[in-house]
Amino acid sequence: MNGISRRCFLASSSSAAALSLLNSGAHGDERNPAEPIIDIHQHTTYRARTPEQLIAHQRTMGVTQTILLPAGSSVKTPSTGEGKHNTLGGVGAGGNDTAIAMARQYTGEFFFGANEVTDLAEARMEISKYLELGGVIIGEQKFSVECDSKESQLLYELAAEFNVPILMHLQHGTYNMGFERIYKMFEKFPKTMFIGHAQTWWANIDKNHADQNMLYPKGKVTAGGLTDRYLADYPNIFADMSAGSGLHALTRDEDHARGFLERHQDKVLYGSDCDDRVGKGSACQGSQTVAAIRRLSTSKTVERRILHENSKKLFRLPTA
Image (cartoon, rainbow, N blue to C red; front, side, top):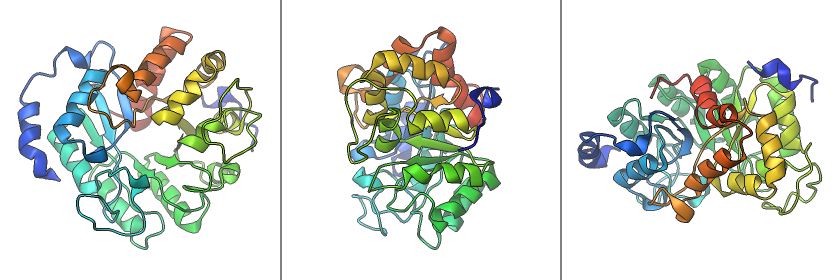
């Protein structure tokens, strides 16, 4: 790893009618525009959740802008049974077409990413097509490849070419393998903005994390793990707080979490990646993550950076 200090980088439209009906109404108090929240990690058709359920979920959480991460156009989904290679972890996420349709229906509130199975020959071309249409991110890349495979590197180059981040689901032995080597990609592609996410990313906040097969380690955390060091040493890597793995990282050792959020306040991004229909309380992991960030941030400035300002700047989003 290089010696860059932290201070150096401070600075499917089948549901269109239902969407139209929802869009015709006022957003309501749930959106809380006085304190906007950007959610960088959601999916269409997530475990068969309908578009209207997703919209209600996001607004109930207080989210004002959402980035939809598609599974890709060639990825199998339960509704069609079509596709190749992989199913984005079996969550039933909608493809590129569903994400762009929702974003176009809800301009300014929803934005779309572009994705494809990493090692398909047509991956670069397919992703490029949706980036040219306005996609703001590549991902979620959640496929069984090495993180430094030649196919992965083609997509890192593409992200830099379009000046969009690429979001990586890092899970030992399953998705984007080789976490201990990924820093070489940060160095090789300095103009590419990487976003780390998922179990192996968050398990490695702990300097003493040794068993990479353990995806949800418990107990006290010693600062200085690989994830901590990657965030400190490289200006082009960011952290996606989403999913159970992100929430677990915050709550397993709240004293450490306060320090972690303080240290990396310019690099941490809020994401939900939850599939419930309610958007609040103990049934909604995304809502719990918002609450944890608010509780554990060492100042209002830190909280607002994580919940809104960092993502607004990274994705160059318009005002909510």
